[in-house]
Image 1 (tube, helix red, strand yellow):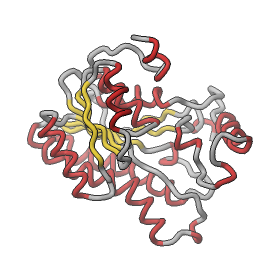
Image 2 (image 1 turned 60 degrees about the vertical axis):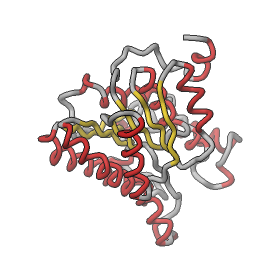
Image 3 (image 1 turned 90 degrees about the horizontal axis):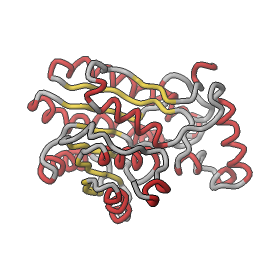
Image 4 (image 1 turned 90 degrees about the vertical axis):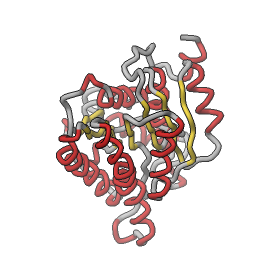
Length: 277
């Protein structure tokens, strides 16, 4: 592994071919957890369809995956649109030769108290987090049922189990994602399909550095450092924030045969945050 690779993602280790011969879709692959997971999947032997609403990431994805000799394609996908979800599944089947793993990573939030939400803002969060997971699963499940196997992993949150002030829409959708995971696991287990989710806590991603979306907390200034300090304090066991790579390895575990008897589960990656509540 070259020095350039180590500098780009110091938390990734040499691959062990755990996904050799598999085809995976990763949504929200532009940055953070999605980007780290797409790269890890490719390093582990998967052919990866990297999907994102951003249209300018193809050179970046090609460069990162290429550093490890991996195989990936980029697709401009809006997961809030059913036709885009169907198109990404068709693209995986037609261009990469199959589909074995779906990682629903795209998501986001609006920080407001409930009475301040417009209907459009509420439905935006609902579409981006919960409905996108449902639509992508609905598009992939017929193929998984036909081949008798498949693996869906979704990026939920510790907010599936706990709440934070001013994040009513986010917390509601993340809790619903956990129960949708359980429901799909029960319904499609007989077809050889496993369905799980990861539930990250405070992870140092570009999205976190821009959260909450209010000008006084955006960027890397003193206020943002205070926010990071509060997040670190909340992880009372390990006293630090997590990295995207640490979440990516949890996704890899759930997507691989190493977790072949695990389904309907929410794997918490939070440095001990939830145990201190």
